[in-house]
Amino acid sequence: MNKTIRATWAQIKAEILRTIRNKRFVIFTIVMPAVFYFIFTSTVGDNTQVGGTDWKAYYLMSMTTYGVIGASVTSLAIRFARERSQGWNRLMRITPLPGWAQITAKVAGQGLLNLGVILFMFLMGALVKDVRLSALQWIESGLWIWLGAFAFMSLGTLLGTIRNVEVVQVVGNLVYMAMSIVGGLWMPTATMPDLMQKIAKLMPTYQLGQGAWSIVGGRTVEWLGVAILAAYVAVFMILSTYIMRKQEAV
Image (cartoon, rainbow, N blue to C red; front, side, top):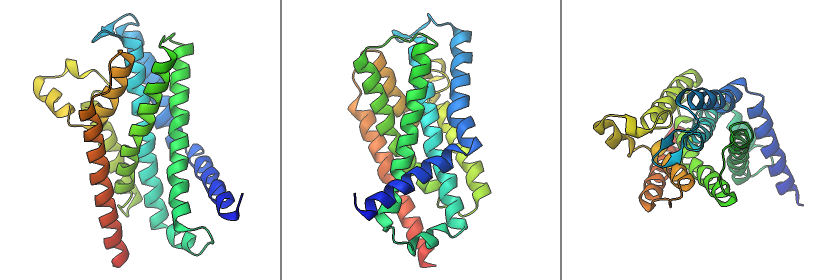
C-alpha cells in the first residue's frame, strides 16, 4: 500500500471518528429515526397495510431513508461550513495529501457512515419488530437507499458553501425536515391532500423513499424516480461548484 492510499484511509477513519463523536449526528440520524419508527408502528399497528405492503416494513424504509438523508445533509453541510470558516481547507492544501484524496475521504467516510445507519435500522427492524423480507429485498432496498443518498450528499455540499456555521445549522435542519415531511417520509403521501401529493412527487426525498417502498412491496423501481434524483444531483453539484469558485475568486 503506497503512502497516498494509507494517508487517504487514515483521513477516512478520521472523518468517521469525528462524525460519530458528534452528538447531533447520533441524535438526528440514529436515535430519532429509531424512536419515530417505534412510535408510529406501535400507534398505527404492525398489521396495517399501506398499498399492499406491511406498515412496519414500509415505515422501516421511510425512517431508514430519513436517517440517511439527515446524515448526508445536515452533518455534511455543517462539517463543510465549519472547515471553511476555520481555514481547515487551506491548511490541508499544504499537507502532502492530494486534493482528490481529501474529497475521496469525505465522500467515502460519509458513505460508510450511511451504510452503518442502514445496517442499524435494518437489524433493528428485523430483530425487534420482526420485519420479514427476502434476502434480495433487504439487499436491493439497502443498496437503493445507500446509492440514492449521494443526491443528498451533494445537497449537503451545496449548503456547506454558506460561510456562517449557525446559519447552515438552521437552514440545513429546515430543509431536511421540510423535505422529509413533504416527501412522505413521516407519513404516507396517500394521507395528504391532492395538491400536496403532486408536490411530494417532485421531492428527492419522496423519490428515494418511493424506490425503497416499491422494492419491499414486490415492485420495481421507476426510471422516472432515478431520473429525478439524477437531475437533483446535477443541479446541486453545478450550483455548489459555481459558488465555491466565486468564493475562492474573491
